[in-house]
Image (tube, rainbow, N blue to C red; front, side, top):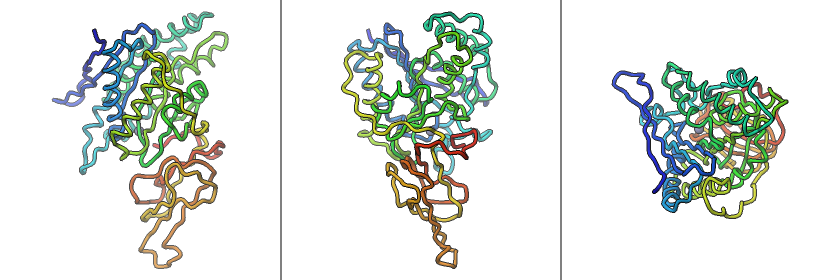
Length: 380
Ligand SMILES: [Zn+2]
């Protein structure tokens, strides 16, 4: 008997005659007592994750046929059925809710206070017992919520499927980029095997990013509860990470099958799949603070010519790009040079070649926290 099941969940109907479904693919006997949850396409316009899911399903089908999945592995290959319908001007958008312009990977549920209230008299000296008590409280609270708008319902459903997972991997991509990973700083370096295995050039750490992306909604509650109740042992029970699978056009079977294989090996090393994983590749770069990531923005309108590529190591003052505006009569003003403001790894550049003042041109992962970042460390 194989363990694979495919289930459809219907979102509450928000628009007359429109029904959205989420497809859940589950594997595993559950005998290992561990759960991994993986989703792709929360930003529905990011294609690489969908293709990685295709290759991962093939790998897991084979392991399942050989009865080699003792963990529970839940895949949501298309996590945002609202976003996949957002075609406009021949482009699949899928990053922002059309109704309120909210990024689909921001403002996920934060139930820490509600859980804290519920568990305060129930905690014990056993970390395992505390983990179970907290998960039960999370289940009760999530079960009692029924958000009204469609995006909130989707976010609620996704968290309801993953809150009890030991591992949550949210597959994304950047515009034109090298592979990089976001996760909570308390998870590092215990989770460095994830970054090493997926070949991340950069891992960006924050305790609170200020925007409550999906991975943080799953993991942050654990260290926040541990801080609230220092007298009791509360484990970091959820390793959640956002994996940026290079850039939006990096879609090939070669890349996706390698990414799927790496995720498979990570899950195998973590005990969800039987067998001994191949040797862990070395970590390419140590993690850096998310607060150290510089967002280089355009200051003038024009056409962007890049001189650096993702993965390049930059020094402060290096020329990253020129913005050219042919309408400027003065040749000296026709070109605006954009230079790096810090030392660090160039992890991504924009997908097209147009600038307007304030538009993001490049992200650089630096080692030192920047002082002018404010509370929100992520883009809108
Ligand atoms: Zn994304």
